[in-house]
Amino acid sequence: MPPGRLRALVLAAGLGKRLRPLTEATPKPLLPVAGVPILGHTLAQLAALGCEAAAVNLHPFGEQVRRRFGGDFAGMPLTYSEEPELLGTLGALFPLRDFFAPADLILLVNGDSLCRWPLKRMIRAHLSAGSPATLLLSGRADPRAFGGGVGVDRQGNVLSFRPEDPPPPGRGEVARRLVFAGAHVLSPALLSRVGPQPADIVRDLYVPLLAETRLGSLVTRRPWHDLGTPRRFLEGALDWARTGWPERLWRHAWVSPEAGVAAGAEVRRSAVEAGARVAEGARVERSVLLPGARVGEGCFLREVIVGFGASLPAGSWVERRVVTARGAGEAPGPDESMVGGVVYTPLEGGT
Image (tube, rainbow, N blue to C red):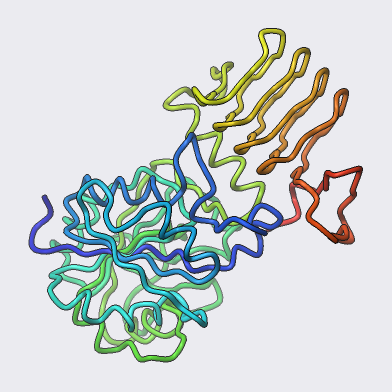
């Protein structure tokens, strides 16, 4: 149990544009990873931490999320904050002022991140340092893939949020740059700086705070994934499905008990969600089959996401693509191809 009263907000209101076409009809928080929606993995960790209540902000497809999770998760009450217009990572706190009023600490978690977060360690580091905010940083992710990363000194104090920004005067030099890993702890006193307008937590809160005080951090080596693009979703889902196996040794697959894989099919280093089916003679490698996906006889798949209800004809050979069912009246995009009732989108379409 963390010290004091802890309440959390999971930021789940994003449009999921970079994850399209997977998010055309399904909100990003409900995309499954090893049989559990992304949001479910996060809520499970918050409940296990002893969080007394959690809020989830919503924008597109909010009703789907409400129906899936209801009013509580593992005994932890849930509050939903509908945003008719997106308020941003800081503005999302404003409608929840009353929700956070009893809290001694606020935990903010990105809804499109996947990690077995060291939340207790982060809270202890926050309380020990006495800073108004503590950010979790990944010691494994490549800062070059995330805008250059967050600059910290040798003690872990945050000095800058972009490589081109100099540290505050008199604070020393940046010792290394690390990637924000999707979770931070805030003092409730910071709510006084949040207004009703849309706002970004880095630009509108953290950068001004750097001129006044120190911001803390905790570095983790645990695997962390930003699931914001199809490629990153594939990598994160497969990493989670390995359940501790080193990638170089993982030869099998995670297959839902409610999925069907023919005896003559070969599925390796992949994840097969509930309701998906793989026919005789098919070979599936490093791929994710979402609920309702169908892989026909003799198909070959490598680094493919087969979307909800999409059906690959027998003998298909597909690599590095997202395969989705064709919607009514849908026309392919400039980088897409359409064959029958199936749309093929390059896996590397997102950044």
